[in-house]
Length: 284
Image 1 (tube, rainbow, N blue to C red):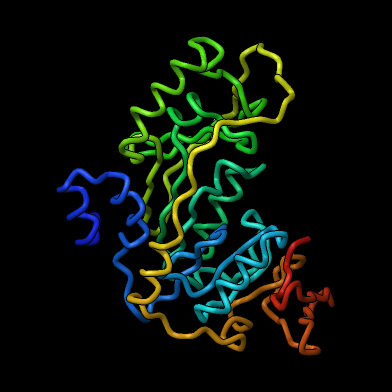
Image 2 (tube, helix red, strand yellow; image 1 turned 45 degrees about the vertical axis):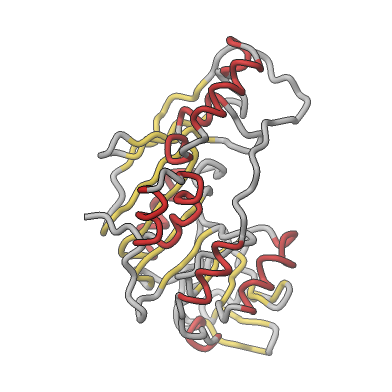
């Protein structure tokens, strides 16, 4: 049975689907003492998360600031090669990351490796066809049983707008976005992820228009996260506890030690990890 937060149920009963969608980050039956990782959290970390994994420090003013303010720990790293030990987390959330990665199979394997259960959310195949995003490498689909991922030759393969025009594209999108759940994959898993990464690459013979543009939709307001964080109280996460959960991304050894306040070293391969904006950096 899927847990749905009572506040979201109320919004859906009132047909306030856009509001209900914003409240979806509350839909997790997570115990207070459970250890939660949020991958690719961006400016609005999941309120249940204890640890955040981010790749791009260029957004550190929002990402790392939010982590500090909410007592969370942040690690710079790659979801395809995470610096965490086996099954160290009880739950992992992965919002809008899988469609971006170069190796989706490796990403999914890593999620299973570091956590016991979790949640994956991406744009679905309808979203990708009607409103393709410039930085989306993969097309994701879910039929209720298996998560399917197909790599794309380009970000804008098989564009709906190329065949039916911009006016119709906007009409279809405006209709579907009334309930954003129509445009997304929402996949919950326990113990393992049932997935297939297709060997074929989506191609269509249309040349890339090369202008780097994409359709835009309004970003989800961070007020839901801010409000939820006030009510979902998580214990402050210490760096000592974080160090006990990490492993070297070079040799996979768990023998890490602090050499200075700004650096951590691997005892096995002697790789040194420094800090970016105050947080340990495990990107290779």
